[in-house]
Image (cartoon, rainbow, N blue to C red; front, top):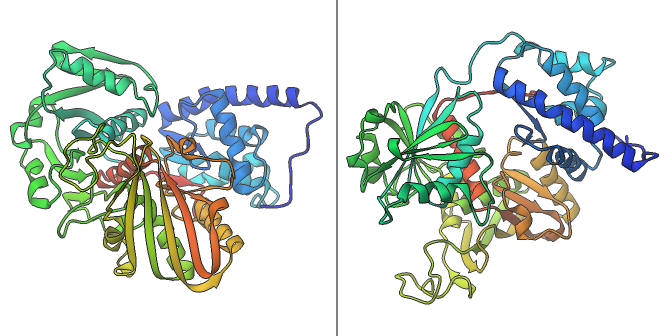
Length: 489
């Protein structure tokens, strides 16, 4: 960034009200671009679609932390106005980055902001190419923590319905006579992630619920073999299996035998030779012919991006991964029998030492780290947001400032910016990261470096952040490809 700093306003309140009015004016413009053109606007990776006035203003403020400079609504408003006056094809456009590139990085080269923005998206004007030839059906097999969060993400991103469409969820029939109502209620209210953003109605006659206009069939089945999706008008669907019951290709292949299914994604580490994929890291190994993919674990998704970044820059000789993980549904609420060691003890009352396969699983994603990492885990009495502590021996010496600056740049400008977020606040705690869409958040204040020894602290929303990673794999499996602006390089 340049040394340009926003001048102190003469009247803070008046300045706030002026910026508030601009943020309010952005809402219909952002909405129209999304609905009519399938153009989704962002500020440093944060979507502006369906955001409130205050949320949009906070998104602007966020840039001050990561770019160490102010981004004002006065600067993004003309970017958005210019885009709204162009006949654009489907794309993802980061108006925050366009504004910063123009005002702070001198990319305008004497042009007005309108001329600069128009030139940046010149090849998008009049474009008719869709991100995918026809909408792709999605089925959620299982409707637990990850299943319901995947439903929220899919519904939130439906927009004009031209890409992914959630068509059904498959569950076992519950004992309650109002099973469908209870399923919908769990989607509507969440003790960790809050209320569903929108409306949900239950249509018991058609055995479905309607969320923000999306009709989602609820199919009751005890196994994949019982389901014929074509009976529900579902075809060429991608099944997201979030039950964890089957984790090898033979077990997951049951889905492929169901009429109407073409691909399967597992939301757990895959066994055997199954491809384990972390979005943004090794997703280039996905081939068009692949029918079964694992999205690995939440912890593998959290640690693989920073491990790759650090290994590429400094080299990693050896390391240990300690996971401080929120308790999960497989633990007991009170002391009771459990087949695993220690996990039978009450989850909300104890720290529970246990094992994690994430360190070894990283080798499936980053083969260059095979045999270099060990790992262990502690389950703690919090319902969501975990931490991974990386204790690394680097290939060359560095210091805290250099490592932090490198990771800040990786979070802002590298190909992994959707996976790595950056925090430089000395006051953040786990609940501050509920709802993070990143695979992990690098805590710069906690970093320790002594020559070649480095200790790195990573927060991650092991539910929602991981679900966002699964969604990115889902988009790729569906062949969805949006143009992204500003262009890399």
